[in-house]
Length: 186
Image (cartoon, rainbow, N blue to C red):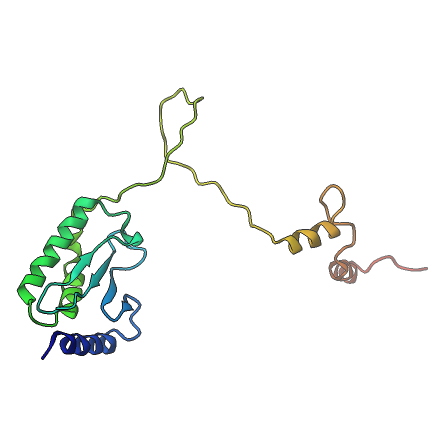
């Protein structure tokens, strides 16, 4: 069998195995992504694997350069790639994509045991802060963003103080009067 026939058979097998699996993504017929772990998991990572023309006789290219992996330190990335390359060497000459994905999934904890999330955010400090203590950052509450149409509608209903005019909700006024009985006539 030629390398291209092997690739076609493995591609067909991968498509049937991972059909509907949100962790697997086929970028092209020779390039794939597989997410190890859940989106919210801090130890999750995304494997990018590409086949050269002579795959499976030669090893595939493994990368962790996806944006999803930005929080993983370069040392941890290199360790994951070296462990995966050991698996590649053990399976060279055979279809190995499923084996690599499954091995990475089973060994996620050991691959990420030394993982310390990389913080890429810039922290700004106030020049008026004389105490020197940096406490936990407080999140600012975000106001609900309104569209222009919603803002126009709101301003057309309110007076100059931003309050609704008296009696604007007649349903509540009628409901109130029906409960209180209103003014009795003589």
